[in-house]
Amino acid sequence: MQNIIEINNLTKKFGSFAAVDDVTLNVKKGEIFAFLGPNGAGKTTTIRMLTTLLEQDNGDIKVNGFDTKQNKPDVRKSFGIVFQDPSLDNELTARENLEFHGVMYDVPRILRKNRIEQMLKFVGLEERKNDFVKNFSGGMKRRLEIARGLIHHPKILFLDEPTIGLDPQTRNHMWEYIKQANQNEGMTVFLTTHYMEEAENVADTIAIIDLGKIVAKGTPAELKKQTGEQSLEKAFLKLTGKHIRDEAGTARDRAKFQGRMWGSR
Image 1 (tube, rainbow, N blue to C red):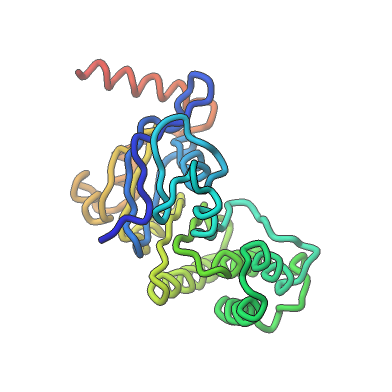
Image 2: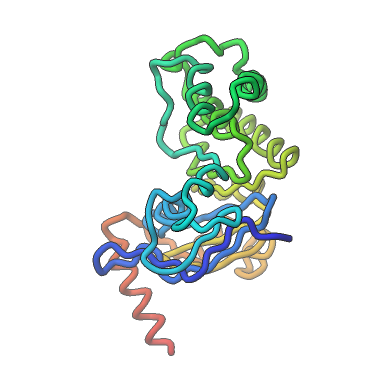
């Protein structure tokens, strides 16, 4: 199967700190790919480079066949994104938020109107299209963000912890929408989440990053078999450790990790 994301020897440093350290990773076209890791592991930095918000120091990235350094506009047209933090305009209606996004992505006017109606119906907000977003619940806003991310028929949908703070019912409905788009349009989904059960249930492939390096990749079943654990959460903890992470401690953890690597050679 063809790769839609290709990452080779990707490195990003902030001063002497390597947030992403020589990562090589491929994502197949049409799969649901979960990118997991503890706090400060390098997930967000990697996504920022994949979506051209941040330029790498070393290595190459191709998204939908386009180089993220040389072909930024084509890369950006290839994906939709749902950010971890809310990014809708609360002073616009649901329809106006989608209209603005469609214009930004040069969706032709006639197609844009039909696509907006289609997406609002798809996420169950057709009856609320003329309501201001500031009056929406958190779950409704998340559904609208998904609709916005899909408005221009992206090849890839990036989801950065999309279900954080949502109740189980809304989370289940959200994944129904996303899996339907994945199946009907062949759209690749690249997600991060701290809900291990969620990743285990929806992802075709999982990569785990820790301290800037990929420590494991495979199907949920393969990762459980590799670690000898019965659940993905236990496999994750076995691969990344059980101590609590924070951003401040990441540099210290990285130094210890690298010291263990060199010491084992």
